[in-house]
Image (cartoon, helix red, strand yellow):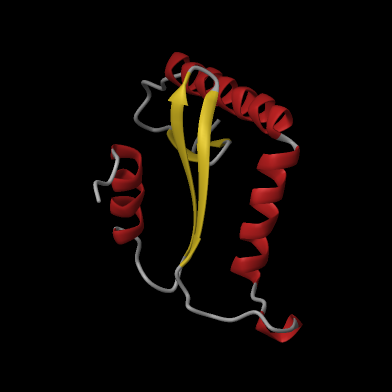
Length: 118
């Protein structure tokens, strides 16, 4: 019995997963299209509420969000990318030459220390 390329690729993907983890895997299949796979490699059973843990619940939430709110997630992704690119450009434009002034970037915040003398 021959195995097709898609099934082979899926088997290789599953064999590469580490144990005791929850995975959501997105794979681009073309312009504006993707597939989504979810894996639970914990070998846990979920018989009642006590069996649920935060990672499993969040994985279910992510799957639901992607299924039900794909357009909103796409729009938020585009906005986040644009924001990051603009922020990086602004940071490059404000490169500081004075060695007495220090600048650090923490997430979305640029902290500038002008020293004690102003």
